[in-house]
Amino acid sequence: MNVSKVAYKPVGLLLGSLSGAVAGGIFKTVWKRVQGEEDAPDATDQQRRWREIMLAAAIQGAIFAAAKAATDRAGATLVNRMTGAWPG
Image (cartoon, rainbow, N blue to C red; front, side, top):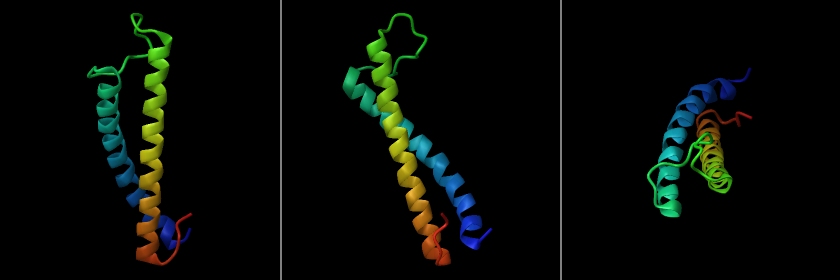
């Protein structure tokens, strides 16, 4: 295993935790603007329609995927600058 991959592990773990927290906050803000509610519906909420549950899941998934991709890329770039090698 090369140095850049070893260096990336702790950076990736830290950034992954941060991105999850940030993505959660972004999703809450977006959902509040879309539906005017504090919390998104749970999939098992009997009072909610399929459309609303699927919309919430799609928005949440897109936000979390974008946050993960951004932090993974930022972490790899940071490790590349520190070690001179891309960790991929």
